[in-house]
Length: 109
Image 1: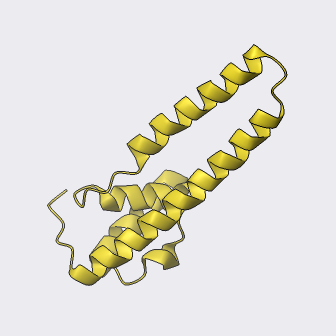
Image 2: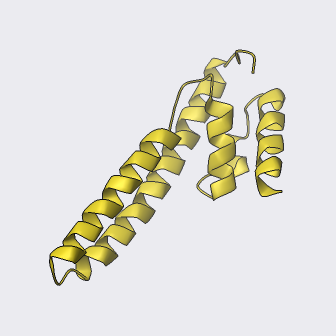
């Protein structure tokens, strides 16, 4: 994909949307971690919580990449997974939105 140009206003929209999606997913992870922590009765339960958090950390670190060169892919993935809503990226250029919509559609097929 060619290098995308991002305007100042697009960068502000993207940063806000990215942060909202990240916070939503982290809250869901925290809810599950609390649920797992409440169920700890032995060492195996404690290590299950550790393994869950380690896995989630790796997945979120890989997913939430704020490089402009990959951001349309990131947004498509986040929309596809339900962490971001398309209206939260309204204001991005139509070319970017079209690419994001196409990728989401391809992921859903």
